[in-house]
Amino acid sequence: MDRKEALSLPIRIGDRTFQVTSDDQYLEDMRGEFEPDTVALFRTLVKPDALALDIGANIGCTALLLSQLARRTIGFEPSPSTFALLQQNVDAGAQNVEVVNVGLGREPADLNIVFSPSHRSGGFVAREGLAGHVTEPIQILQGDTYLQATLGTDRVGFIKIDVEGFELEVLAGLQQTIATHRPVVTLELNHWCLNAFQRTSVPDFIDTLCKIFPLLYAVHDGHAIDLHDSGDRYHATYRHIVHFEYAALVGAFDRQQLDAFLQAYVDRAKPRSVPADPHARIAVLERERLELEQELNAEREAGRAMQEDLSAALAAATQRTHQVRAELEAVRASTSWRITKPLRAVKNLMQ
Image (cartoon, rainbow, N blue to C red; front, top):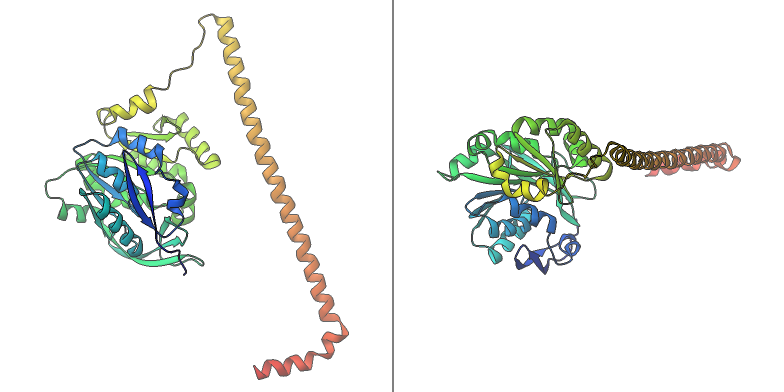
């Protein structure tokens, strides 16, 4: 599989600018700055004395961010070729980051990682390859077993997981570590990867996370909502599946861990102002109801239009299939086709 030549670009990550190297489109898409929303979120979650785990470290941008926020970071990246870039980027830019060329999971396994040659960051764990993609063999280790053998008395304070649908497998392998160390965990919600690669629905995924974390929030556009609240959970699920919002999740065990996060993403959101006068209150609520109904109707219309477009495309494809089939039958029934039949038979025998 052909790949681009390695390219090094200056990338602003947190408070520093690093020379970061990769061989895909990822760096160019950043336009000189690494995910400002992620930087802002991590500033509220990572304590200066924390040991951080970066699971799914890719080429190292998140590890370089964590190098500025945490005391120590361990990055895990199973792809051999991506790991080489990760090692190069970390060695050039951070002294308090260690990287390991393995993935973490429920149990030890020899699997594959599959990714587009133009986007390493979308690599997913699989048993088989995929046409048009790079496939590399990888080693998965059981998370608790590995950490117990390597951490000693150090305690994990923060875990970032970005593994394209493999999140529940990672968490299953870290049950003891999470129960004992009670870290803050941030992970990606990606309904496409969950459904396509793990056959897991978003509601099932969130239900499992709610059983692990007493506090669980979904973050979008500077605001967080509580996934233990059934109404907020429905809202986040809908907005994520339809609009791909609320893709960042934050799990924790007590509110003290999340003081800065709650102040920035929850408490900062001011409650709506509702007048005390009953008549004025009715007018405000009625206006809000109409706005919500208009938004819902617009989404319904968009869905209906999409369905009509799909139906039209299907009808056109069906019609074209019938035309091609009729043309094929006409050719087979033609005199020239029957006359040349012996010649075709001889040609087949000679091949």
